[in-house]
Every structure is written in C-alpha cells, then in structure tokens.
Image (cartoon, rainbow, N blue to C red):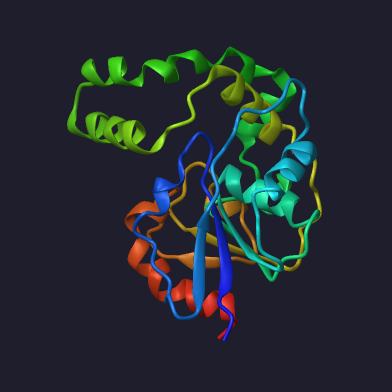
Length: 219
C-alpha cells in the first residue's frame, strides 16, 4: 500500500519544529515539513502560495496548516490537487477574524507594531519578569525561527487583508474552544478541541496523535 503524504505548514514566523511531537502511523503516512521563506517585494499571498507548492513533491497530498499556515495551505490547495486540507487554530474566511483584526485593517494600526524587536527576542527574554512571561519567551525562542522584519511586516499585512469571504466546504477545521487569537465564538463548523488554545499543536499533541489519522482517513 502506498503511503499517504502529509505536509505540515507552521504558523506565522514559526518553524516546523512545532510539529516535533506529532506522530502518525508510519505504515500509513509519510510526514513532510514545510518552512517559511522570505517573500519577494510586494509578493501577493497567491504568488507566495504558488512558490510554496514547489516544495510539495508528491501528488494529491494532505496539507495541514496551523494559524497563518492554515491560511496559506488553503491558498495552496487552489493551485494543486490535494487529498485533504486541514487547518488548525486558523480561519476559513476573513469573516472569522476577531474585531481587532478588522479594526487593524481599517486603521492600518498593524503598521505600528514593532516587528523589528522579534530579532532581539533573546534580549527581551533577559528582561522578562514573572514565570508565565519567561515561559512564553522560552517557547518563542525555540519555535519562532523566522524573525526577518520584511517577512513579519509582509505576513501581518497579508493575513489582515486576506480577502476570502466564502469558506471552502472541503476544508477541515480543528479549533480549540480556548483560542484567544481567533476566538472560538467566531468559528463555525469545526472539530472542537476542549481546552485547546492557539498553541494546542504543542500542548494537545496527544489529541492530535490520536485523532489526526482518523480525520485524514475520514473514519
């Protein structure tokens, strides 16, 4: 039996190491990991998605994307034939955006974010106070690998101006009911992970290891 190729796309600025705890049965699936590259100047999301599909070396793969990676794999699935598109902690359309993202689009407030500071996250970590902040910065240090200002500026503007208003009915959406980035109240027709936050791919990996195979195979 030929194995099913499954490609994983991480979230904004994250590396594919966020999937390090995800395990699929090796006799059924082959796992492949995509990583962000620096966008070209004024590159559209559609153009970027087309370039990313060149990293996919198998026909009819499963695409799995987290957060902004979920937006990207939906655009990729418009370019290539896929077996299934699965998004995690993400949105199917801009109608599922929180109010603050809609506000940022209208006011262009996202342009005021100090994206250049991400390059110096180790410096920020030294000045972190409180266990929660320190722990969060440790996660950022480990998993946020794409820190170029040009990429971050492009990503923020690209997702805020994502123009999809009608959901692709074939997209499978997995969402946590405690997600604060994309609040659950705005999400419809999804597979719910109880207690799942925006980073549930890291701390709810046991749920994914148990359920992803069945979701991919539609069991």
